Amino acid sequence: MKDIKLRIRSMESTRQITKAMEMVAASKLRRAQENVARSRPYFEILYTTVCDIASGSDSFTSRYLEAREVKRSCYVVIAGDRGLAGGYNHNVLKLAEAEMAGKNAAVVPIGKKSVENFRAHGFDILTDAWWEAGDVSVSDCFTMAKDLCARFLAGELDEVNIVYTNFVSILTQQPTVIPVLPLHGPEVRGEEPGSETLYEPGSEAVFDAIVPEYLGGLIYGALCESRASEQGARRTAMDSATKNAEEMIGDLSLKYNRARQGAITQEITEIVAGSTAS
Amino acid sequence: MAEFDLEIVTPDGLMFSGKAESLKVRTVTGDVCILPNHINYLTALGMGEAKIVSEGVARRAACIGGMLSVRDNRVRLVPTTFEWSDEIDPARAERARQAAEEKLSHRDTLSDQELAVAEAKLKRALVRRSVAGMK
Image (cartoon, rainbow over all chains, first blue to last red; front, side, top):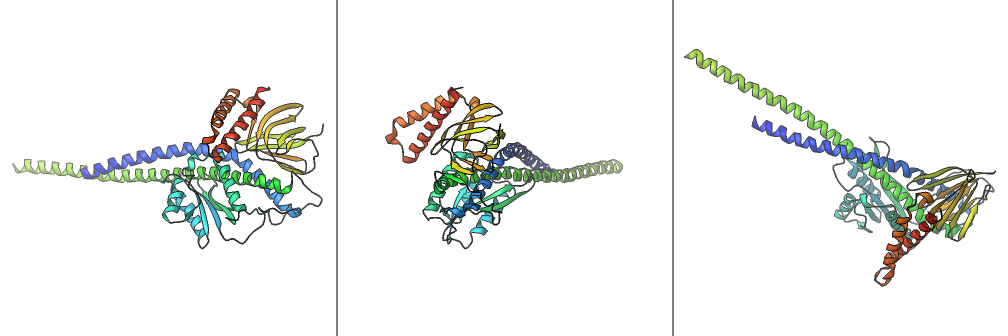
């Protein structure tokens, strides 16, 4: 009986913790969702604009557009800082590792879990300056993008991909890979004749200025999505943990009550038996 | 009066969406003014003041980095930061300027990267201050 009582008590404190974590995740999720909603138009306009330019780029070439033979690829992998978020970290890291299998790949991990994972598995880490995904700001994204673009132009990297978790809804998060460099225009797009574009100070100079900006924007967008996904995943995981704890507490109380009842019944029988005997 | 569609988006959200009559921004090579029916155009933005005339009202803003694209009379301004003049806190801009100048005053101790960051900060603070100051 005492055992059961103790177990009930420990389950109760676990439930309290998971319940609190769920509520924290829910409120953080709300903020992260607002963030995603705010940054999405930027993300989309940036993307369509650059695609427009890339698809209408017959008139010029840029080093950002050429697809080279891939000798070394780079993956920016965004995961969370903390565990206890269901399959969130695991899924995105597994996808990243599957993508990198068999390639000469370098990693830019963002988030504590991502850094730890790639370090433990001996991957080639370009930089681990972005240790905490929660602390990365817009300007950090632009610094990172500038660095990656410089390495890309220097021929150190031949392709750049971002691996992140797409926030589909509160209940579904999809780990995703998007290739960012070299730039890909959409395959078929009705090219309107005569839609010539004026580039100032020159197509290549414009491209050189815009691409790091574009990459930074994409990384930031992916980061926002990932953060929202992390909170979503944690909320769901904690919600089910709380439910499980409640169920177990229910089971255990039933057992406890039965045992108590049994003990009382036994005591009464003993007393009754004793009094009839005398 | 002729108009064009203007969208201004930053990582912090949609700042403006609607019809405008003219848009003046500072690009990497200097100020340009976009009027309706501009040729398709693409350029990178510098750091400076932006002036938007919409429905006869002119609004000013500090507009830094990013790009400007014009396509079929649709203008998209995609800056890194964009603040309307009435949203800038002049005191904060002034403090940022002082902090940046303070940092630059002993430039020998800074690495190249720190120097670049401090210089960018100073420029940004100056732009914001001048935009906020001339209300």
